[in-house]
Image (tube, rainbow, N blue to C red; front, side, top):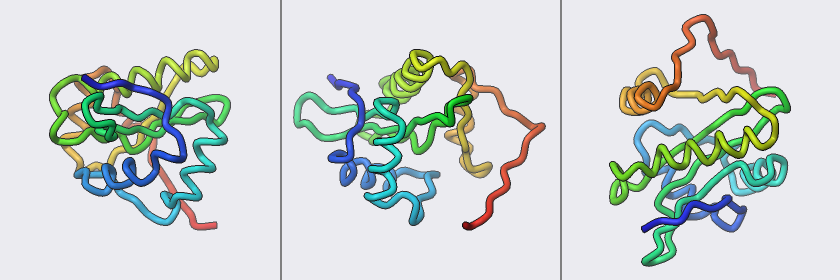
Length: 140
């Protein structure tokens, strides 16, 4: 059994280890302990951790936040030991429910084009590919 609860800054080490081990998740300097703690503080209880009830370790994690208009979900990962049990779907739904409570009606995700497994997961769970948009980035 697992319990899904809001993520806290104290979850960073286990969540970061899960993200680093996950195929298709890209981490960089903005995923440091300090940046994730600030993200969690700014976005309230919209990010979630799935806890294995038997040993208390984090077996799933997702970041979620909002700009006040749209929601954004990042770094959804589930430990291989818990894959295929619907945990990814439950974590997604927890994020969508939290966004809905905040009055946010649309959520976006960023998925590497090469991450076929993630693209298939999201398509199977009702996410729609937006081919009319491109992401552009610039260092500040």
